[in-house]
Amino acid sequence: MITKDVVLPFDIQSFNPYTTQLELAQVLEIDKSTIFRHLRLAKLLLPDFNFQERLPLNRYQVWCLIRIHEAFKVFRNKSFIVKQIRENQHQFSKYTFTKQTGIKL
Image (cartoon, rainbow, N blue to C red):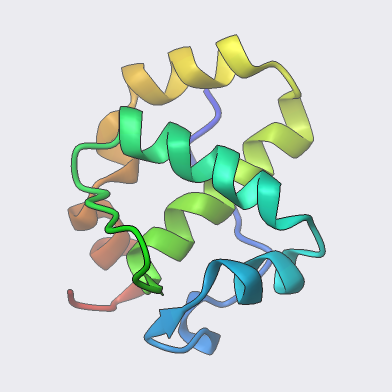
């Protein structure tokens, strides 16, 4: 399973409460188009994601996108990752985010 016990390479609390897509891309050292692809997946698969165009990302959204990015670095198989996220949506919930990070939304 891709979502259990994922260790993020960053302390999510080190991010500002709101981060732009470009800032996240720079921190992850990836192209902004990769962030855009991960955003599309998150919007389609994660009911709690609630992304609004032209607004910066909150910490929960950054957390989700980093987890998706880390899964792609390991597995590189989009259909497998999509299947795993669909089957384990609770691992990407705001409740799980708060439980793992201690950040209240």
